[in-house]
Structures are given as structure tokens and as C-alpha cells.
Length: 275
Image 1 (cartoon, rainbow, N blue to C red):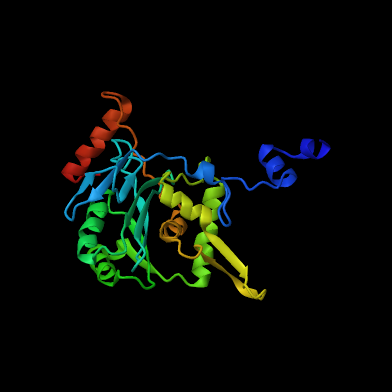
Image 2: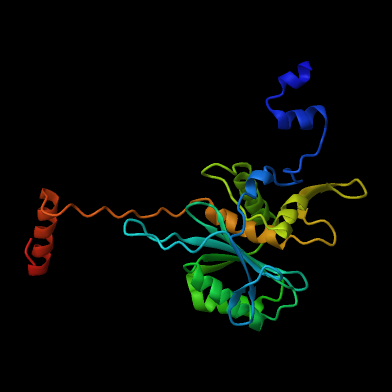
């Protein structure tokens, strides 16, 4: 009982005293229960030309609608990670830079032809205020799609080769965002079963089956499982390290006040070219 009393919270009791594996912990990411706090508000299926509501066979889940701003604040900007697959799915994961919340996640079958995927990616780019996209430069069938996105959106799209160094940096950032879930500088992800399962099962290997210690850790999904959703989210994570500062417009002065007359005189001087 003394040991139990010494534990700071119930979670520590379960882990330290009873050695129970908690459901909100994964091999790499922690605090997943708080991280997956967003319920999808809508789900859609891609018809080849448009997204239509579909809860049976969806490929797109959203937690909100694209932000449009208001008279005092510009519309929010978004960052998306894009992981192309061959036999495994292609995933695009989009985040609001200001709130760090996952706004949408799209998952296309590995058998989806790129000619169908390009219009779908175009639609997502148009709907979500032309997000800044970071894609994996590795293999996959996305060659034509990558070239198209780079040609059309130019500086709005960048490739990132997921070498060991960049992978560790992105995953470390994602770990921080997960651990801080529920705070202003933490993630909030959409609670979609396949995505949550990927985060829970994502693993790190430091020793081979033969007992040989690796020079550096290897991150991956377990055999016969996918990690495309994790990869897409991690690609976006580093670009969320420095949230875009929203430019706030100063409210206009009340009519006929001193500030109002001062602004009117300045405007008139600009029109006449006088200083």
C-alpha cells in the first residue's frame, strides 16, 4: 500500500505496481487516448470526380470545415503530410497550423490509379486553403502525382527523403505533440480505427532477432501491418513546430472619434498625394 500511495496517479499505479499495459500507450507514441480526441464529423468516398458522403466505404474523414477567418483574422493555414504507397495505401494527413488539430485524413487504396488520385489531391488542396504539403520522396507509385503537385503548387509542395536522420527528427516531434495532447502545443487527431491502430502498433527495434544490437533504432509497423497514416502525420509534424502566426487586423475606429478623423485625414492625404 505504501508503494501505491507513493505513485503520483492511477496510471503510475497500473504501470509500476501491477505492470499492466495501458491502452493509451504504444511502443513509440504515448498519451494516445488524449491524442485521438476528435470524432469525425463527416466521411466521404471519392467517385473519381468528387467526394460524396459515405459512412460505409469512406476514404476521407474530416473533423471540421475549412476555416475562412473573419474580419479581424485571416483564414487559418494548413500543413499536410503525404505518403505514397504501391501495394499499401496512400495517405494524406492535414493539420491546422494554429490549433495543431488534424482537420482531415484521406486514405486511398494501394490499387488506386494515380490518374484517379491526382483529381482527389487537387480537390483536397482547393478545399483546404492550399495547404503546405510535405511528401515522402521514397518509392511508391506517386511519381507522376509528385511531379504534378510540384509543377502546379511549386513552393507549396516539398519532398522530404525519409532518411534515418529526418525520420528520427519527425518522429521525435510527433512524440512531443502526442505527449502534449490536451495542451495548446499538443496534437488532436481524428479517432479513426485504422489510424489509431497504426499509432498504437508502430514500433521501434533496437536489437535483431539474433540478439545483435543495432547501431541505430529502426522504426516501422509490425509485419503485415501498415504505417502510412503514421508516416503522413510525422511528415507534417516538423512543419507544425513553428505554427503560422495569424495576422490580426486592428478593429476599425468608431465613427467620428478622434482616431476615425485621423484615419480619414491620412486616407485623404494619400489620395491627393500630400503628406
